[in-house]
Image (cartoon, rainbow, N blue to C red; front, side, top):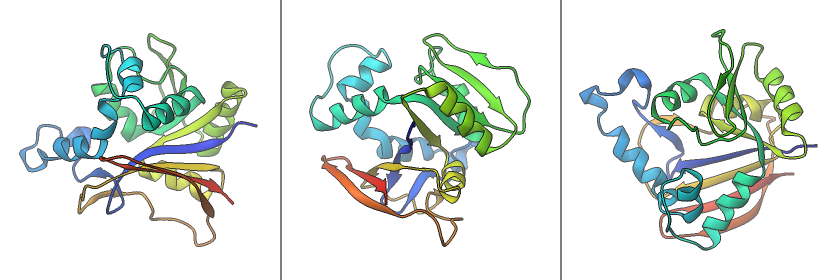
Length: 212
């Protein structure tokens, strides 16, 4: 059966996204620093060879253990699940060929026809909740795995459902001091994990936890 996993960046103080990182706040001066904070959180990935290759940013880039990790993680994905907030921001920012190349199931109250993008990405808008989304993702993923892409609220829902098999976290040495925190709103009897792997780099520590 496909594994369900999370693969995200996280600030040192536990936030997935800085305060004000929403479509509604783009361009508002009181939230103008969120872009710099996001860049500091995810800067480790931008110069990787495989990341550049996957987004068609041109040749070159860093190789090594982290680059191999990103390649292996990307190639194992057969379907993605995300929340509407993440989709709304991505719809505005992603290139025409969205960087998923799989079916993507978007948890939303909005009814909308599937949105087909070049390169193999199709967004499906799921109104029946997280359980139905993961059922559909398993059907389409086949022998490959399902990534819960975010945001924090969506990951929390799946942690509370006890369906996440692995957590892959890129812990960056940046402090947000506010925003959307990952580990909150969780059941006391939630999932338990053990450390499976760590990879250190100068810009992030890459942690992999597997379900006990």
